[in-house]
Length: 82
Image (cartoon, rainbow, N blue to C red; front, side, top):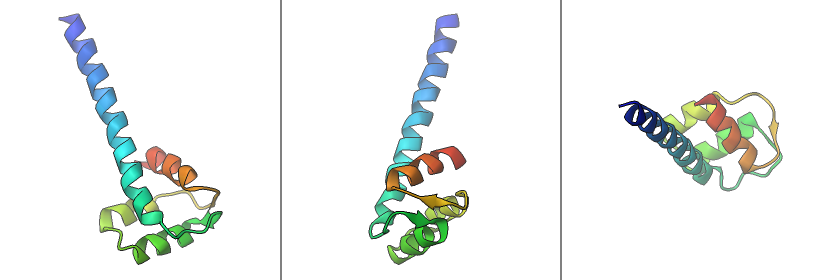
């Protein structure tokens, strides 16, 4: 049964990794129009302009206060704060 537990853990890790990628991709669609580098507040304002849902805005509000050089930087930070 040890193999099952290990396999189960691996499956859970893969699901977690996939959901992080899905979240980052979902959020990235609301970043259209952001002129990078951009501050956290600029990113949030553009997401609002792009009609981002409340759950996306909640995640963006948890980002670190700093300048983000690219959308990839935002995605990495989203994965970190989720």
